Length: 482
Image (cartoon, rainbow, N blue to C red; front, side):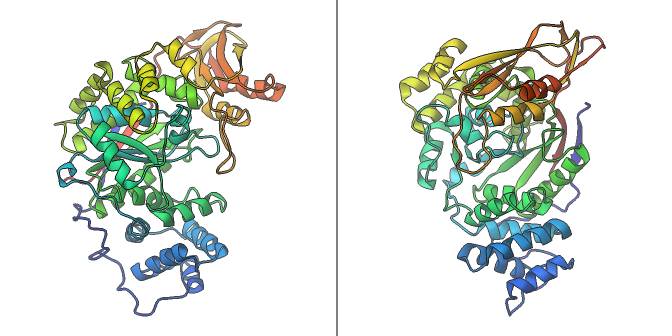
């Protein structure tokens, strides 16, 4: 897959102060606020909501005057009728202003960066990238989420480390950034509460895939962080929200455009999510693989994505003269142990016993496995025929692991943190019949016949010669020229 680069076409960004003043192209606020049924009707019929309309809706969501049915109806109207860039910008601002704003020392202004992913299988990039960026002189106040459905959550992965605490106040976040340079925390009730309500409603109203709602949800949480630059990993493919690159590009351009409208430098990377990222899927197993990457080793696709995304961020924030130079700095942080050192500091600062943090970061892979949750049983699957590994489909693999307890179907559902799978082969590799290709870590009974068939169907073999697998990185959508 050839990497290409697309540049946004919007006008240069204006300084963003979140006040909402000076937003171009929106109608003047109405002196008389409209009632929610009227707002829903307007959007249902394809109308354009004013700034006052949007802010009135968000206020009603937060103060509880909007009924659940009304929230669902508005979300569906937005999903079906869409929002233009200006409407989406105002919605993002209104969500961001619904709670507390994070405030940092003035000296940090150009250091503050973050990364967000739309979700994938085996995606442990955040665990590696946050400490690597901290080692490069950045401050990374990463607000992450939990897994829902077949995609894994960064917070769940970190909570497989005994003692790790994702609940941190804004004041505690500042201390963490002073001590470690990075933190990875959950979204608190004080930060963007309106988004928390809408996010939960979207999940049960079939409106998860709405471009303006996705954009406002992602960027509102990042706007309150007061960032200098943000990179968003927009996944496409069989195990992603968007099945093809064209749809993912549309979201990427919207994110970059709205970010520019709010004065935030946003770049969006389009990355393939047909096969798992790396070789491990499952909470504790992915922590092990992230540590391996911070040893300067590990799967090449994971390292490639970490260095590319990090390089773009260092360049956007002025810490590197080019993306290539930034990527080289991130790679050096992985190879010289400085990223691992920052990860150890973050673990200890977020509640992990310092001796455990040290053992995890300094131990061998075998020693690390003894320190993290482990499944009770392992079961290997054998290749059904000779051939070259063309693909390992991520979605059926994730769905079976979800059934085994690695994922959740409802918010708050407990996880089996040791459950997961290890790929024993690489895409492009020659494979002989009867060779183990997958190791499943399970707590329960042996895999059912249905589960084994689903997993075996995930392995796609061909008769072509062995090849080098392409990078998952496909394209980078950049903000307008400064």
